[in-house]
Image (cartoon, rainbow over all chains, first blue to last red):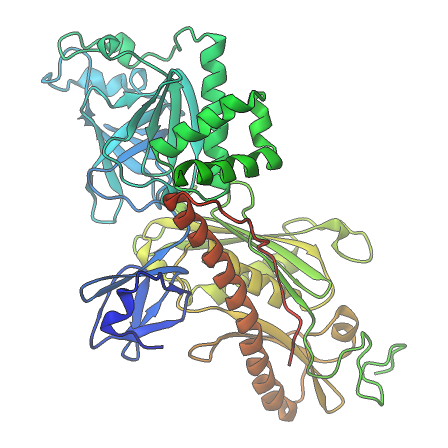
Length: 288
Length: 264
């Protein structure tokens, strides 16, 4: 099957699979998810064919996270090594968080001391969750993270939900505040942090950078209503992910309102029937 | 070789009512299994295998990493209830280890491992039911699981067993037939028609080999069609669900199982 110039203009997504020839390699360049053999561009993954000018790529419908510089990710510390942490970020290799890419207590411009290297576990320990940004790549493709912003750092007061990374689209902001007193961090790697809402003015400012608070391992007091809201949002995300619906703040909000209207308990959301109803209600709400 | 069971009767039918070149029903289920990156369950008649794929991910053991490509790690477990006679097999069973390493070597030239240096791809094979053609079922399920995990492959790998009863070749053998007649397993890549695996545990007459080998390659193409259909179906459903979600249209939850009836 050959590909003509105008094949892509119809707005129809072409679906392909491994070993399927897409087009001639004379007219087009091969991108991700393809390889060239006997003068043909051939798909190597199953997904949709995308074209940018002469570049053909195939986007796998489900795969591990492919990092890009500037992406916001949520990760979990797996290992503490000399001057660095290893972070699981749902990618093909563990990410690296250098000691020099985190904010240390005592001011942003503070120099790193040997004592900092010795007490790395007081900042991040194995199993800690954190939100960070992709800073750069190493030569082997592993990503380097940084948490040099006051919005980044250790996570607490909440719950982690995992979804396929393709369901998280790039948004204006990946920090979402739902009106039900729940904050969301939509990591592009498919890890989502659902937590209690923190008021803007209570976030640590530049001067009042408080190491105790930033690297604290203790949760705040969370009342029952907030706990229920967090679990409900968590369940909604799991449900939408199981139906393979891309997550945006609008969809989540609508689903949450629907869930409140139904007056069911939090775990009712995980029933198949309730899930189907929610998904079909989403469609009708948006078409109006 | 005398046997209680007639492998091929005068009417040209085998013990389970199939013709010589007839394959058993293929059932493919590509639904998500737990936290696995990809998974596939395939049944060839009564042989049923579930494969889950994790990765590419950070290697558990540093010594297992290669600096220029990913490592394929295949682990196989056979359920005690998978055979007629209940029997517990340890993971260290020599036969199981050998089969796992055969699966790994089959896929090493097919998976584009060079794209994932220092990573590891874990393939867990669970045998749920056995009725002959176990290795082909494992290979086919692994292909599908790798595809659902989004691991780049050069092509599908489609495997099938073939055997010879006196002079007539048979395809897709059951346990009864495997116990009785010389047989071999062939895994092909359908696009280029390259062969990634040929294995024999019994002696086969050299003059029968060529015919059987070519037949098995052809059967591989047929299995490829079924596998391709199942993969395409799943991709269409998922892409459709995503588009619908973006446009805000309700998603019809189609049954993702694909059942194939027509055979050669």
